[in-house]
Amino acid sequence: MALVGVHRDRGELRIHESLEELITDLADYIAELSEASVKERGVFAIALSGGSLIGLMGKLCEAPYNKTVDWAKWYIFWADERVVAKNHADSNYKLAKDGLLSKVPIVPSHVHSINDSVSAEQAADDYGFVIRQSVKTRMVSVSDICDCPKFDLILLGMGSDGHVASLFPNHSLLEEKDEWVTFITDSPKPPPERITFTLPVINSASNVAVVVTGESKAEAVHLAIDDVGPDCPVLPSRMVQPTKGKLVWFLDKPAASKLCDDPFCNKRYSSDGKARGLECRRAGPLCSSYSGHLFHEMK
Figure 1 (cartoon, helix red, strand yellow):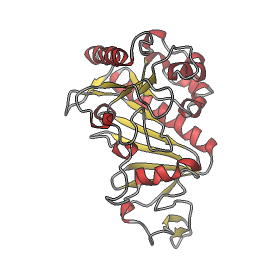
Figure 2 (spheres, helix red, strand yellow; figure 1 turned 45 degrees about the vertical axis):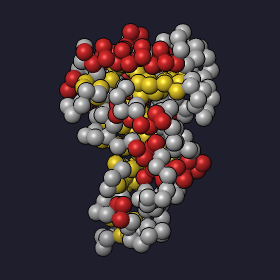
Figure 3 (cartoon, one colour; figure 1 turned 120 degrees about the vertical axis):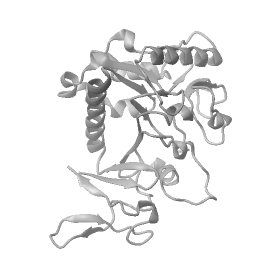
Figure 4 (cartoon, rainbow, N blue to C red; figure 1 turned 90 degrees about the horizontal axis):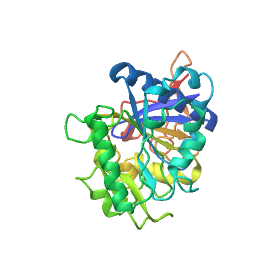
């Protein structure tokens, strides 16, 4: 059973006892957003990332989602991509195609991958143009407070260094304010050439979900979510903060293990025996980060 809480500044936290529970919750979340977007706009514009994220989306290929989701209304983009051939093992497109897109009835022309036959700089420019055309045709909404595209959902993973998309700690790309899509040729992780959404685009989305699993990322989760003070490094994942949209963190128990308010420590119970909140073993009844927002069980 997942525990759900709302952080004062960092969005909704969904913390799961098991990976299987997280995978099911993530599928439900995506399917519900898809249904709501199709009902409201007639389409669902979603941006994917790479890494383990696609594997965690795999339940969407199974019943009931493979039949109930309106796949023909999906428009697929990538929040970041490696500038390699589409059949290369490092390609996020290949990862998504093999793990998801080839298993559900997505319309091929609705899948917007990068131009992999040009330089990283040109690929970023080309992809920015593709998104601008999609905004003009209303496949992708536009933010009502800036000219950025407003995706219905941007799905992100997070590295153990706190990077999201291809936005890495202490990199100049974190300061990019004008471009929707930019490029990197010196990625700290191979392959070195990539394109990526910029923070203004990510933070203009209607919904952003950050999906993180594993104990190796627990420290980065702590730094991204908890009130850690001015002396701690500001990770790219901490800079994800939708201006008007909703941010949701999908965490398994190991990834959440270093959060200040640890949802898997001692529960508080009301007189009727039902759990009504959580004791924080690090900072008393509840850390200030979670003031007024108790975790509750999500059935």
